[in-house]
Image 1 (cartoon, rainbow over the protein chains, first blue to last red):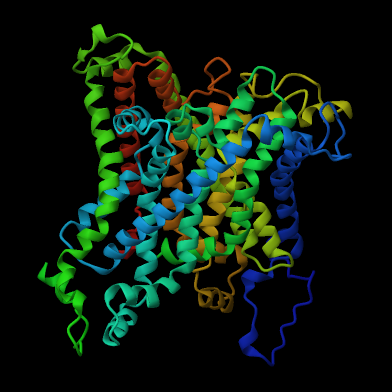
Image 2 (image 1 turned 90 degrees about the vertical axis):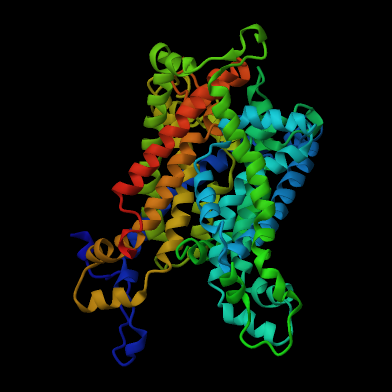
Amino acid sequence: MITEIAPAAEPVVSEPARPGKRRRAWDEAPRWQIYLPLGIYLLFTLIPFYWILLFALRPAGSTSLVPWPVTFDHFRKVWTERSFGTYFTNSVYVGVSTLVLTTVVALAGGYALARFDFRLKRGFMLALLCSQFVPGALLLVPLFQIFARLQMINSLGSVIIAETVFQLPLSMILISGFIRNVPYSLEEAAWVDGCNRLTAFRIVVLPLLRPGLIAVGSFAFVHAWNHFLFALMFLSDQSKQTIPVGLNTLMSSDSVDLGALAAGGIIAAVPVVIVFAFIQKWLITGFSAGAVKG
Amino acid sequence: MAQAAAVAKPPAPPRRRRASATPRRLPYLLIAPAALLMLGFIAYPVLSVFYYSLQNYNPTKPWRNGFAGLGNFTQAFAHDPQFWDTLTFSAKWVVAEVGLQLLFGLALALIVNQSFAGRALGRALVFSPWAVSGVLTSAIWVLLYNSQTGITRYLADAGIGSYGTSWLSDTSTVFPAAVVADLWRGVPFFAILILADLQSVSKDLYEAAEVDGAGRLKQFWHITLPHLKDAIVLATLLRAVWEFNNVDLLYTLTGGGPAGETTTLPLYIANTSVDAHNFGYASALTTVAFVILLFCSIVYLRLSKFGGETK
């Protein structure tokens, strides 16, 4: 079969003189078996991105498949006339607050789960797992009532709390896994040297948690940035709304301004795609460190 | 409790730590913020949904409010064909999405786990849709599918296919069209999780298998797949729950249409509570959705013998 073909595409430098350098068979896939499927999949991934870029950059009414001449009119229009400038600020506020709140609260809880045995621990873990099955979308009405009673409707605080609450369980499970991977003896050694628990944690454990915290934090940010339904339901004032709600408004108006919609989409995508490009490596190492060992 | 204090005590501290008395209360203090948030904003809403499911409750028709017993449930199961339609569609949606995401996500993870030139860039590009929101995904695919602005128009200009209508407004094409749009964003998520787990496969296993003369296919079947099993079970379960509950994409992409063709149960519930203000009935439907999710999850974990090897 195809898979049995020896990797002839690349001369196998087996160098029998260096036994330690032997390459794994798994790595010896013929190049075309990598590049062909990857290339096809890349087309599927990138054409949609290209399409929206095309509509954002070419003048209205143009049917050219190349965005030339480039115009930034759509961006100018959507940023000022369609108040994406305001939406952007609100989304940044919601995203960053959710990130900070989720990480801090999950760090505290995760530490307790990783380092102590206490009576309610099993029950608490079970509650965390069960909460994964609770659909936020189905709790819209009771959540709305709660926030109304707290006078928080139309305030970004309601969205931040709601996003944080649904990010917390998974974040805490992941973080407690990361902490468990740090040997307890490191902390104990710091105590012997005269540190209290908090200082020992800050100096010894926290630096080692960096990849995991970056993964969890960016996860929380991207979710809060992207999530649509809570903002749609809890924020009625236009000046309080976030980017996904703004996009939905653009999409559902009677005569859709495609240029503005595409430009708004680019504005929505750029921050998260940049965040993602930076954290991608940590995301994979972070997940493999926390999720697997559990 | 005494045990906790003992565990937390450092071996032979030279001087008494200030914190030595706290560990008894410390773990509770540490989980308190998380526990309070979850009690207030998850547990309480869930309980109130259970409560309202037994009530007639509609703020626009207050004269009919009151205890309903199981009336809402019999209404759903016996007299509401839309409930069954949306439930069936939800099942179809979850199975199609999770199955295809697993298939493509696994393949993608295996490919980008190889070493090849340009791997870092390749990974960043294929994973990038993961970061994009459901609403933006909708916006992009609405453009792509539209007969005026989409790909079909340019293909038709070049003599391939016909101009026709948007795939999203035709009842025979809307399902695959919506599935593909959600795959675009969902496959990278799966690939990332599986890739993360692939990194932890011991390389010695492959070397041993190679010495034994096992080919790449055999190595995949006997080493990689068993290693990934728990991660796959967990990822498919989380993803299934997530796909079941996710309303962002379908709400904005098709709005549940055309002709209610793509309305999932959660979308139906959202419409019942938000547009029709029928909170009591929506709560009963929500309760049914909970029970179904929980039941399916337990059956799935049992059938897949999750974590079975460790015991």
